[in-house]
Image 1: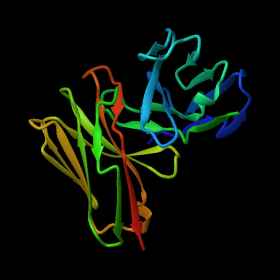
Image 2 (image 1 turned 45 degrees about the vertical axis):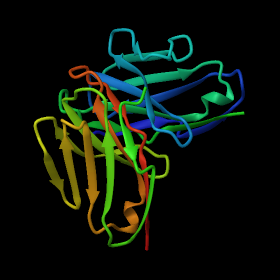
Image 3 (image 1 turned 180 degrees about the vertical axis):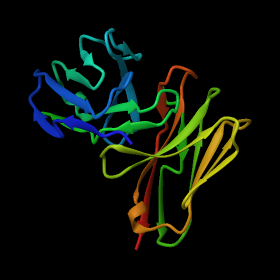
Image 4 (image 1 turned 120 degrees about the horizontal axis):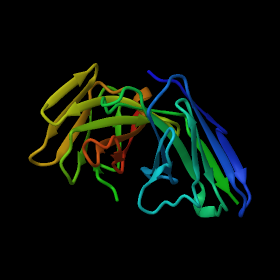
Length: 115
Length: 112
């Protein structure tokens, strides 16, 4: 199984600020996925990040609000920009360890609270 | 939009009893997966069932898939307090894209 480290694990942020979440995987992976889980809700896919290309965003998510970097095959960052209380969520990084298996491994998540 | 709808939304049972959760989805799939989430932490993969499979077992878990009804069920037998968690089904939203859409989840509470 993959080991995925996310930082920060939690943070309390002020409205209008931005926060960058880091995701480090212990092996090289082609695609990394960023999900959001609002309080008491299920997971919603934000974007898919491939190394060397721009991230592909899902409907309702835009690059200006959630810029993503993927500088290499083991690392990605998600920035939540100009935060508002509605951005309070758990943000989860995920990888498909072996392409085509469909099995996702998740980081422990970053729980953001925006005041 | 949510691909999977799960029921019940919440389930409370006694230790030793069986727990059954259901998932319905809307479009054709290559596979369906079940995940567990403890207390808002990261998700743990439980089991994957492919569209050409009807039933799969893993330890105390039994998953069924009915593609004609676009539904799946997860059965946990002889439940334990440690099984208390939220359970989510996930489907490949567009087969071949490696993107997975999660259901609404079932919150299971197992009472000791």
